[in-house]
Length: 364
Image (cartoon, rainbow, N blue to C red; front, top):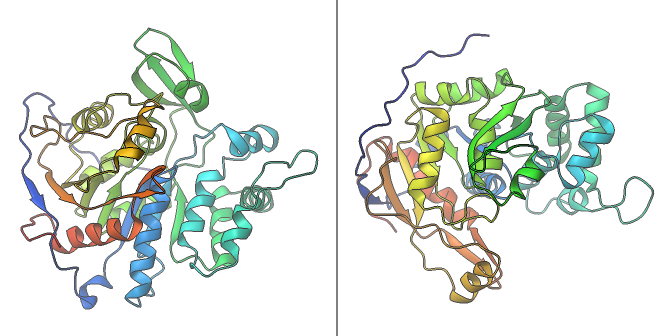
């Protein structure tokens, strides 16, 4: 299939990004019903975005199944996903399962069922039931994307989940030490910083994923692990180029904390630099940043694990033309987990979508 041809971006001059607040008003219902939002990622970040968007859509009584779409990475090779990938030859189901859970109704009995981990039995101990169901449906249909769609229909998913590719792809990292490491699990365990990430083999995208991007009113990237959730989607052939070429509002959600094994001491600008250097495109219209202070006890706990808050510098050399938007997005769970609040995140995203590419309103 053909992919959009667009010019690559010159990475030379630094750019001072304008800062602004999130608009106070969420879009009116008659406008909101026409919005279709696509989010890319994996891990815990993408489900938070999808959950918030699905809940907000439900509150407004929206019925469009295509209003919320998640495009998820398929490079995981650890835990249950890695075992099923190795033993059954299926694509890793864990991230897709988490996205389906996020899109399930809050009162659905399927949420706890799909998360249930088998605690005994040879060969199945430790597997979440949702992973096993996706593996079984993949074997039945012969297609991972159809397996996700069928499981989504069974649980009454309030949106779609699409893999970025159907190819058996793995991460490959060139480290600053000069070593080359293959596989997500091995990469995040290396002490040497990552110089360059690639996908092996270079995969073709799922056509439905590109179509979702083309037809989106907004595209959201992040939050999520830079090297194991964000880039694995953007490096799939045609994805970054399609993003660059479409008219939808494009939003990057900045991470709250750095990650040991991936982004130690990374500032926001360094995250943006890595994305631009890997994709060669200026992708975003908005960069959404948390302004809510994070609990000191939670920060100390994370620091003991080698993680620290991501700093948004006044001068962002790699923000391109994007406007920096600050809003209260963070929440701590018992001062132990620092996460984006799904509902607050969804409200901020939809406010930016309603504002379009030129935003100037007050944050609530």
